[in-house]
Amino acid sequence: MAATIITEEPSHTQGYGLRRSVLSPLETLAQSVSTIAPTATPAATIPLVCALAGNGTWLAYALATAAVFLVALSIAKYARYSSSPGSLYTYACAILPPWLAATAAWSLLLAYVATGSSVVAGFFHYANLLVQDVTGRVISGAGLALAATALCMYIAWRDVKVSARMMLWIEAASVASILIVVALVLLRQGPHLDAEQVHLHAMTGSGLRLGLVLALFSFVGFESATTLGAEAREPLKTIPRAVIQSALLAGAIFVLCAYTEVLAFHKAGQDLGTSQAPMHVLADVGGVPIFGVIIDVGAMISMFAATLACLTAAARVLLLMAHNGLAHRGLRATHARNETPGRAIVVTGVAAVAPVAVLAMRGAGGLDIYGWLGSLATYGFIVSYGLVCVGLPRYLREHGVLRSGAQIVPWLAAAAMVLALAGNLYPVPEGPYGRLPYIYLGYLAAGLGWFFWTARAEKTCK
Image (cartoon, rainbow, N blue to C red; front, top):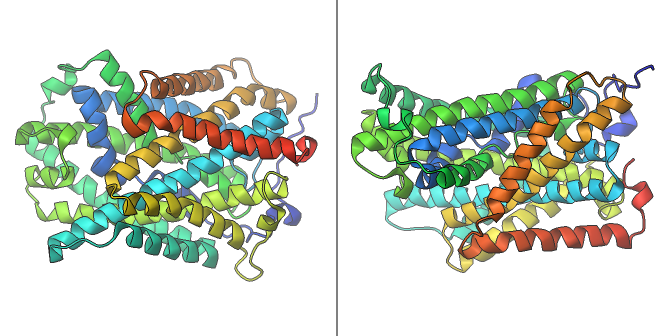
């Protein structure tokens, strides 16, 4: 049977009014890397994982890297044959029943928007740390979040190429500063390994399971380069590479940083799981205390870049949802000169900053908001990843490219996502985290309600 594979870049009509073929492979990779926000993980997420997994923190990240790599391989298969601004939603539309495609769309939109909320909260946290060190005072978290989001919205509206370059250089500088400190700590340690970590001393199975779930949050958004299907050069080549490269690159950095941070805190005689300034301790152990401040600056800027990346991705998903009848048709509009989805950028930007501003005004701390909304985003990503992995074998079969054993990787990836979702739900988290599943389900019910109410199920996958 002849294969019916899409082998060309999107036509002009498939560009949806976006600027076509303007992003280089490196700029396309920058979209995924910036959404991951690799600087935020050593500064904010690894300590949370350590509080659960202890000396198994590096193992939690190694296992998370393996799971994400399986998902990346599955997504890259789709990306070799199809490119559009809709990311995983496009792939779900190609193979799943309309209501499941709508589930993937609304889940993915929530995932990008909530991740944007999470990282803008991280931005105001680190901004206030720096302001407090200099002046002894703090600035309104809500005000900082609003200002940062407004600037991100302007950059995303103005020029996708400018925003991609900015994200690339911001992340490169931030990650470089962390890797310098990591290298210095390891050099001081010498050629021998940390026995407590190698032997997983005092680690428990339940702690590793819960730590693994949290470690997965560090990777969410690695696939966001797929939202640039209309704007990347040679998208059928560059996007699959960007998806796999970002997953592997982030995984290597996270495993290395997890091992080194736990090692440094052993040397310092402190508890990483309760530290409020882990990078300062790491820099002290490495013999370069000034780098603690430099990394805090890098973390703040990285959070800003991640906010920009999330709005860039979310707006393009919303744009395609509007074209396919899942959102108001007015959101189809793109700016005539900038060729960016201006209205969708405004909607997703407002949706991202609103909960942060409200929670900040109610006295919530930046890192608390970062954890809450980041965990909410994880539900959307896990569901989206799982759905597209389940549909991959049928997609390949219909395109005549299914090979023997090709089902193994997507089914393993889907199983990993099911286990991750179960780990998020049981045991039931305490406090605000226990409410997040209900918030996600309520949001999803509203999205699917809109889908069925419009009675356009047959038109949702164009």
